[in-house]
Image (cartoon, rainbow, N blue to C red; front, side, top):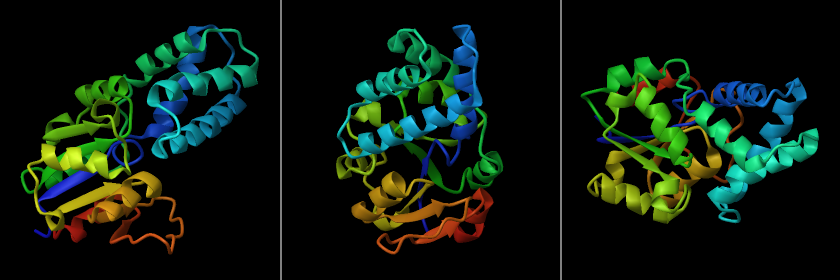
Length: 228
């Protein structure tokens, strides 16, 4: 086996975050008896994505992100509700979503007992702990490293320092990072001296500025890389 530890990103790699986000947003609007328009989802997605980029760049805190994305959404949609309350309801709903990316469960079944595995995520503790606890994949992972608990986020080296301490300081050549985000997962792995596998279902062109050891378009494409 070429690696001993596999570090999986959560959202967009194991969990279907886009689907969960859309469903949670609709259900939160319904909770407040607000009619939901399709364009609201597009507005929120743009606001949220921009703020998460800022979080990765450490120019905004997670606490600010949690509320600010809904403050901006509610301002754009001219709806009168406290964004703090709206945010909490959304997180409660999102934490119940356990839909997986196609092939995730089957992949982890094949890897179980052959590799040691952990989850590395920039997600929010309340959501990630709840989803993992309720999911069908919870027993496949020894560890879960959440940026909100650690105090650092991917791609920062400080984040990976904590991860490596938590998994017992293996040799870096024995660790593979699997994730969908170039800016957090792949950049973080590359900067830390780890091999990375980019999960790229949309078949986007690979950037020339970033070294990517492997690229896969479905999760089960990982199996031959791992000699399975």
